[in-house]
Image 1 (tube, one colour):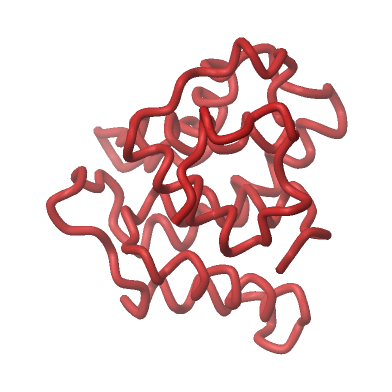
Image 2 (cartoon, rainbow, N blue to C red; image 1 turned 120 degrees about the vertical axis):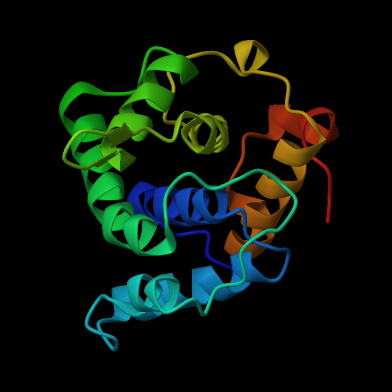
Length: 178
């Protein structure tokens, strides 16, 4: 279990899961890589290297990724750090929509004449992070999660250790045990 994880690490795991459409067993694998990164044993690049080299199994037939794994691997940690900095300087986001736009902007890939802005993956990541206290709204006003979002959040909860992660008020209405 990982009850002592900081927001940056939770954001990294949620985004890695959502931006790769990863399969069930991969959330725990990604969490272990994040632990390795924070221990300093891998020079802070274990997750990035695993994504870049395709060692993480991505989803198929779920939703199409609009960023390559190389792009995702390069943008995840900077996005998580920007998010943490933003939260420490300005507090919680006013809504899931604001948080989603922040994530989409941070993960956007800009090329010569084209910008790829991954809004769908950002939306899913923002929904997850709202349950970890990144949005300044009451629990009752958090969005109702669809089946896919509940499964993804259940994977994150399982990888982190569910006892210390979410407010008691959420209960089973919002989440599905895996």
